[in-house]
Amino acid sequence: MRTSEKPAVNAAGLSGPASRKLPVPPRERKPALAALAVLLVLGGALATTLLVLRSGDRVSAIRVSQQVGAGQRFTEKSIEEVKVAADTGVDYVGWSHRAEVLDSFAAVTILPGTLLTSQMGVRTSSELGAGKATVGLSLKPGQIPAGVKEGDRVQLIHVPNRSAQGESRVLAESALVFSVNQSGRTGTSAQITVIVDSSASPEIVAFASSGEIAVAELPGGR
Image 1 (spheres, one colour):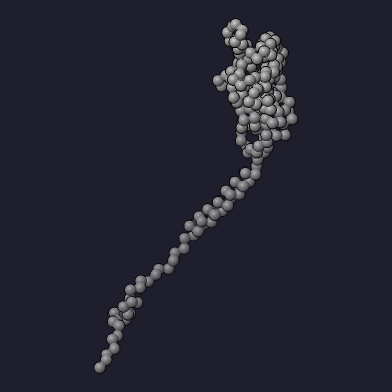
Image 2 (cartoon, rainbow, N blue to C red):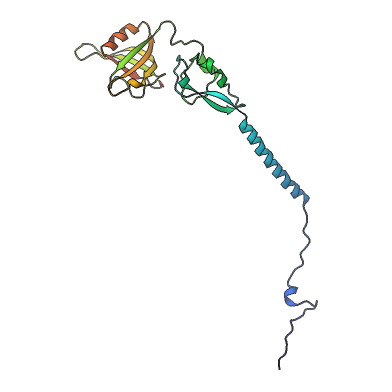
């Protein structure tokens, strides 16, 4: 004879599984946290908008793309346009003034990548003024260091031929390299133009014509 088993009933009249469920309290609403979340969202959106607006607030300035030696004239190849923030606090020269820059000279040696400021340019060049002369040199390998370029400071040294008597001596202590003929920089010769004192130019030209000139680059001359 089968007998049916009924689930045990507790004192409250509930079955076993149901009796293990705890009552869930009503969810509390926290208006302060909700307001804070809204403020954070709005603040993030505002910050993003400001960043976008700030990134668009840029102006064109002049950056030096090739080294310009002290006293050298700025050229089209030596400057380039670059975008900078309008409120950098730097007294940079705007790209709209490039014509004036090309009609001026570097007051100091300016390295590539430098943002040009008004203090870096002068109207007249002390290197090309009275008492100065430009001299062209045609040099063989071993008479000029590799990598010499416009704006470098070099020594010009008289190196006598083996048949001649005499010792080497400095003809120009700190000559400015005015230009370098890249097309002539081959395995056989290199042509450069230097600025020297006019009093020394005749002797330098004479020794240059006989191939008795060597160039030594000065430390920190670039």
